[in-house]
Image: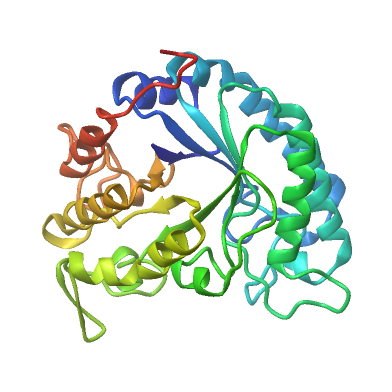
Length: 324
């Protein structure tokens, strides 16, 4: 499936699930942007109000997801306390933010236990610890504490955990599995970053795939080598892996983005990983409905190669048992 915009509509879901046949969305709970937004001010009453409003939007559309056979991953994209300027999560600087993380997941586990349209709970998007303050938990121990409480309240839905920092595949080399049943381990694929993020964040445009990036040739076999930490983590612990985000900017030259996505998806399917493309009807830089001209913000008149690629895989999806 795909990641979706926080402002997703019923019409969007009917296209993605009904026409395109996606059977999964990663539903981001994002307050004002990533990584920075209003949460950075540390006002927890305001955070609660934002979260409740976001969950009401989800509640209104969960029946649509169930009808279409779309399973939802609830992704906490904005942590309590937000981020500092570094940027690192302020979760690791003040105890009140760690306590609030536990509280909000208790609230969501109670709210959604038994919900047929839900697949799992992604405890925190791309955590970054920085220097952990005295008396506070690092990410792995905090995740275990939250996961254990969620599992007490909800015995059925998956609990998704990304390693720090940034949910990177290399971070799995130093991450020990949680002592909690039903945990799925997740990471994101955006390498080489100079290719996937070309033309934004100060990266130059015009980088092709396959091609040489930073002195190394990137092709399918180099992607395979870069994914080795995840393969070894899965092999060592016998765990379920999920790629919660992967993408390439749409203006990569000469349909490079389509070739890159094809190779990434082929590898994920070879390894048996679930996946969500980033993103459907969010920022148009990642949109498979838009063409390669970065100055054209209207959807393409005919399906792009990237859209056809995703839809060819979605056509292989099976609906959840409750819908079948």
